[in-house]
Image 1 (cartoon, one colour):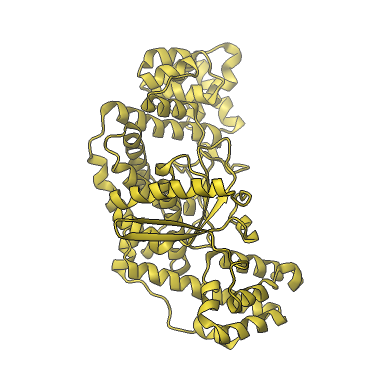
Image 2: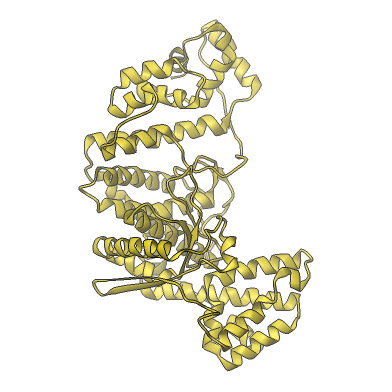
Length: 487
């Protein structure tokens, strides 16, 4: 295995301050992306060396022999994103006591055979290609490799010819959008992305996608609804991939596991996840910024520019590298906050962000029984409310954003009929008095408490208001009066 270990002993990977700043702004140059690609290969080789040290089998000898005969082909296979996923899984299994065959070490012999005997049957080479205005991209379409299951989403079955044609048609249109609207970002995608893994759609989501920290350059995604959704999905997941690669080289956060609020998820997220969200939505906002004649694009732009800025401002415990990276992110998005957006669109966007935060607090910030009792006592005595500190609890499962009000806002902006609760329909239409009256009649619901705060003009901690009402509900208090009291 000497041929492999020599690479990991080469010069260390470095990025200049300017390169790290450009990465933070979401504007890396080609040389920086190539360095991240080399870091990926080095990481894979280090993983391979650890696997070799843990389980010595003939599979390593086969791969070493293949490298001597066909070094470029072997290195190309080792650099692929899915090799990183396999290597981490294999090493984890070996360290947990699995036998080499159970850990999948035989995969190395398969790679050796593929390098030495390239053949369409071994690598059928399904591709997605885009070519527009002199900028070309080619992505592997991984719809058969068993390793595709390891990106966290359920893979779709191998695509039929008709499905493949649909993916290619949508990709063509998405690539034209990207090249025409955001050519520098399209150039980043062409340099970073290696493969797309089709996955099964989630009926509860508008579309799902994912990356893996161990698979720099691979994107798993369900079939996009339209070319714009395809473009957004690729931009979003490429940013995750780039940030993962940056974090191969630098620690950006002192305490990456500290839980907090993320504008993009309905569950509490670690600081590392909040940073990932801000970085991914930076390019989503940049793309939506180009859709100046589309009300829904303006809504998404107004919403995500504010969310990215707020999330970046809220990050704490940054390392020196993290300060530089996040500072560049802030500097990129900050001027966008002053760009004009139609007043009705701005109202819906600001409301959607506040609504999400209110509902998140109601679900995840918990008031202790003693504090609930103290609230009830103070209410009954006509006293000022006591100081209460809610407790953030970890959610039992991952939760993507889901909101009937948000769905109605999207329908309104698309010019579609509005069907939903009376309060929600009135809210998205701007009739806040009618909406408040409807929400006030249903104080047992999370959406109603958030709705009352959205439409009343009052400011209070929603989880404390709901907790006080829960204790006092047998006395039939006015929920709006409790909110006023806490405000």
